[in-house]
Image (cartoon, rainbow, N blue to C red; front, top):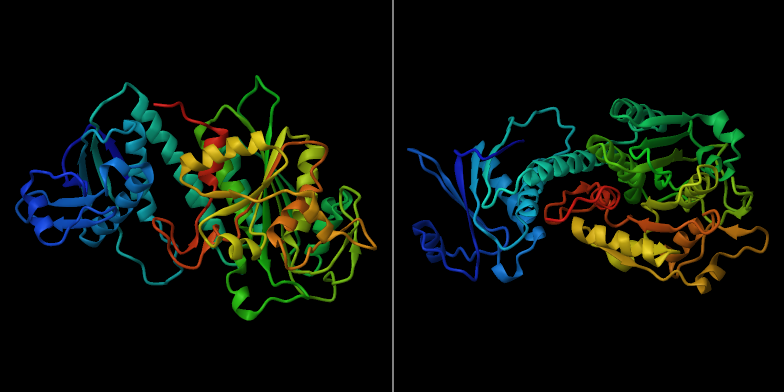
Length: 475
């Protein structure tokens, strides 16, 4: 998509509100024929002799927000493509919102509409949209900054989606590591990839136990971006990187396995965030970590009842081989906080079905040991339009994964499953390092499209993390 500032020409976009009349002939005609101006309503008025028009509803003006603008622009993109209108013109009026954020919301909505993942041999007809945007107010340099900011953000989101959508016959741990190197190193990210023998030598027994059943060897991927040489403060972001999850000997039902290439959604978010940060040349220090492997069945696979160790030295009784993500995260989070000594850490994982039962596909469940850190993350999530919901990090739940024969058990039973899984990971945070756990099992990969988010991979929380780590100045 080509986005031009201060240029005119193309199909004209007319935004309208359901609670505010406009004295336009097209609007009056549309109203008479059932157009109510609801959020995302779009009517096309072709003109064979000149420029066509699109009437786009934004709902009640008193309730206007950035998410409504994104959804309306998303629907507009679909109509532009359906009608082969490849040049569109926005001559903006004052919505009463930040002008830069309004433009960024329009950009994001159009961009969201353009995303499509397919492996079909038949190619879709190319559609390249050119946007001519005339702002209502032109704050010097602000719009250009906003445009670059949102462009880098969406590049990160789309990269995360592509990684998560790619199927397991292609997306092996080795392929993931190579892809990270190829795409991030040219942007100034230092990428270190540890292979099987090195992982074993580091004492990552929990991670290796999960990896043992597969013929595809694991990879431990460390991505370091140092954009602020004046500071030693570093944030760690750790993503679950199970490139395929069969459930191991506690095998999943067939229907549940079809989408298990997406079990590295947390890793995809971390990698997409690193891309967005690096492309922006953000003044921040971030380390991204992914313990990538497959959870498979073979004569080498770990078994229910096994007692294994971990990099932290804690022993773990295996109650369920399908509770594998928390084992890989245990070593990865410990490495981040103990070896790299990051100042704060966030882990993201498609961790539990329990979070889907509790929150559906709308909200990410979060746990923390530091309320101030979570408050900062919540604000970024709100600004990004991504929903999170805090779960109680109550010590009482930890009784559920106590073991009689080991330090911990990797399952806590049916009740409070998302909480106990998150708390298990938290047991491997070294010292008092501020930590937030994000269970994205319901939000990283959707069973059906939701608003401007597509079916399959969403790239969820790339936006949240990007805005947390690289906040944009207020309007």
